[in-house]
Amino acid sequence: MPELAEVEVVRRNLQRWWEGRAAHQVCVFDEQLLRQTPPDALTEALTTPLTKAGRRGKYLLCHFATGQVLVLHFRMTGKVICSDVAEPAYARLSWYIEGQGWLVFKDQRRLGRARLLEADEFDAYEPLQKMGPEPEDVTTEDLQNACTDRRLLKTALLDQSIVAGVGNIAVSEIFWRLKLPPRITCGQLDEPDWQRLVEVMPQYFEEIIERSMADEILYLEEGEMEDIFEVYGHEGDDCPRCAGEIKKQKVGGRSSYFCETCQGLSQ
Ligand SMILES: [Zn+2]
Image 1: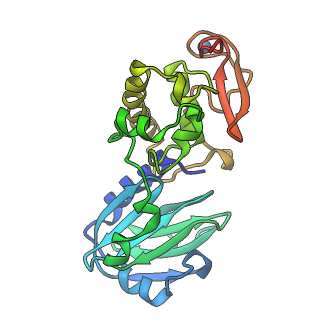
Image 2 (image 1 turned 60 degrees about the vertical axis):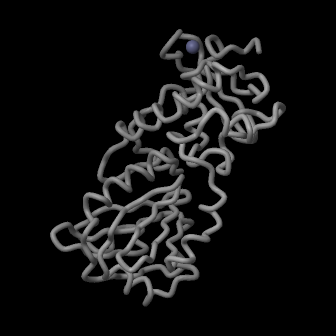
């Protein structure tokens, strides 16, 4: 499942492949991907130059010279790749960029979405309006103001209205870096803990983006992904820091991975 890092990798690729250029040909293979957007309107937008490949949280934002924005949401298995052919396996939408090849929105599970917004619709687009700051911009005050004492820190960080783009994998990895127990509540953090949290979150994402950079992102669910995590998916392994055992436990309804020795379970 894509988190901020995977979407950012695709954004950097699109910047390289597509910015400043317009598509010459567009093929819509699966209208379910488009939902409210008529294929003709999408084709018209794609054949104007892309001015900027942007991102907010887990949303990829393709800005056109017309002021329109194509919002891509990858959900479970969506991604954009660059291909020699218009219709590789699981292709839902393809557009041809001269000198690069076919940019293909691929999606095995078909849960991804592409929606074209006019400039005014984009300004009012609710999922982005309600989204909290990016991890690199969030402050201790933002977090403390949004978190109640009894709320699990994990649940708070997964709330996109508090901080954008943090997913379940990131939570386990960030907690491990900070030596925080998986069930810590917001009220159990002291001021230095909050300070370290806002420092470590963007560092974590920057490192994971660097480790994930590739022309095609791979998801854990696809089983081909290189293991780039310290604890996530490592149940039963030794902790890379203290050689304690990595455990897996449901916290806030989703699996947390943690070291039972060095992540302060006494709290
Ligand atoms: Zn450990």
